[in-house]
Length: 143
Image (cartoon, rainbow, N blue to C red; front, side, top):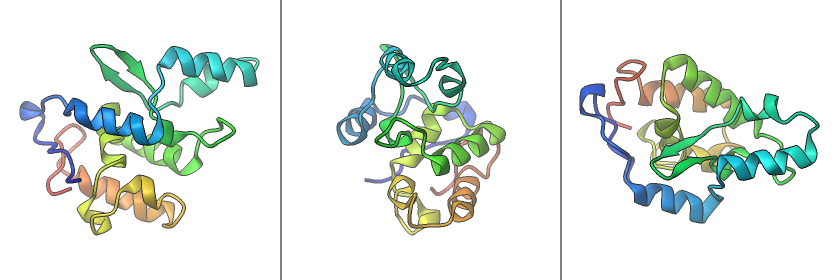
């Protein structure tokens, strides 16, 4: 699947809903409330974990892409490191989530989510930076 077109900030529009549907089918896209409820079963205070979550915002609500969780509901450390970097660069949550699940030119067309355990985190971080190198909210040039 080609990367979503992330154009300059003044041209950015919504990411196609089909991407969220595919993400939900492949990884799960539970609501923020459902994630909080699950985390509350594991953690006495789920708030510190909740504050670290990648979120997808839509008109229907706020959701948490499943690719950031391990089977035990702990957060995947590479995803969290990439997300911290994305936030430092000013990349919006939705665009980071879309980047994670689409082919990336900086990764020879590979999806970052498929390479989490195969590439060094620094390689993925560099790909993230190159993908959004036009500035914090300036979108990305070639993927």
